Image (cartoon, rainbow over all chains, first blue to last red; front, side, top):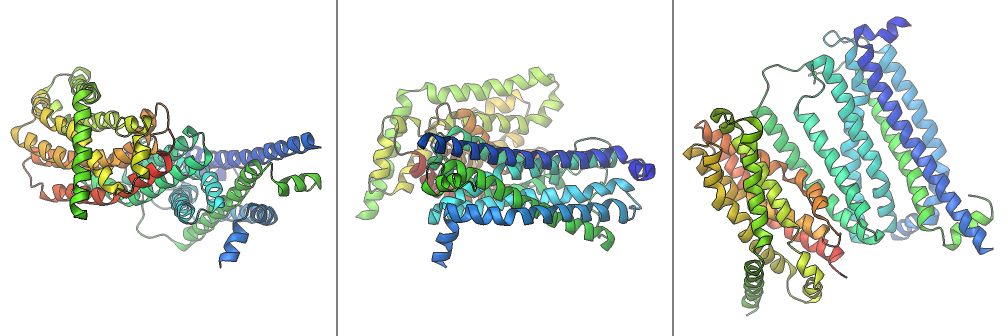
Length: 51
Length: 247
Length: 229
């Protein structure tokens, strides 16, 4: 396991590259979720006002 | 064909369809990422020249492919939007821009991290990295133009023209940067860009490429759904969805 | 008859824009001064050593020309947009591409051409050889019209945006990179005494391409953004 993490001495580079990817992709997922959440709330606010 | 296009292009239909498809896409990209990462990080053998640092290829190359792919997709939306005035194209292109910029940023950042052990510095004005940097500027320019114009319709049509101008220019920029790089070829020969690639490395690379594509598609649908809800919040179909508790 | 009419539109717009430029000289003199000052900052920034200056001269002069062109571009459609004459042009049945070409040509005559006139002074300041100066002249002659055309696309896109100058540069500068690459390569190659025909013909090809394609993009952009002031 430590050998796997070590990556033949390149562990720092490999894992920071993969970590950065995870971070950016995850940020995109969260941003999309938030946008959907906010849009739904916006719609419901409008519905509430109408009734 | 036309009735299909109009049915598909109607926001309500698209919203429902995207909502039905998206959970499957999410499951698919998670499975693809898991397989790709397992094959790429565990199964694929160590490269005899670059050691284990080459494993960055499994995220670097797919993001670089995606960065160009997304721009072309946006330009296609732009052309369709300008010619046939389909409302949906604006939603899809604007939802694509931050995703494409993210992929471009990832291609740059992972390329730079890979360059450190290979070239000895974080940044080299290498043809591919330079082209990728210019592509990032093009994405940011499109997003800045969208942000600067208050009227949504005008902003999208101006952005569509910019995208078409950009997509005509990209091959020229690419060619000129390649030519510039060979002109100023540095003395040290880089180890990147191996002439052939072993199947044990190619398979995870292709799986990761497909995973990135599915990820893009899923996020595109998700962002587009949010944008449609926002734009159509006052229309009857959205209000009916909200009242029946299906939102 | 019709051909003649089209031509008279072209010359009419050209004459009108040139007259306006003569009346408001600061619009084209200021970018020119910017060009001169920007180039003369480099020796102060990197040191007065002749050899180094000669080496960076093509890049410095061309980057400064690029920035000066972007500064000048912002005013291309602005006045016509604000006083409503742009809308008149769009509504009228006159060929839009003719109007655009006339406007871009007039703009190039007052912003691009002075850069070329100024180039001997800059070549002396940056220690370029006579051959290098000829090459610089040639590239400016072929390259600045491309900058004007590309800049006009950007100017048309941002015409309705208040303080759109910086945005214009963001949009257009990446598209100008091929011009920068080929133009500086010509001057560098000429400086070491090699043949430059290849690069010059590439610049010529870029010019031909932008003359044919950008009026379409400019007209499209103006139809989108140039409507109501």
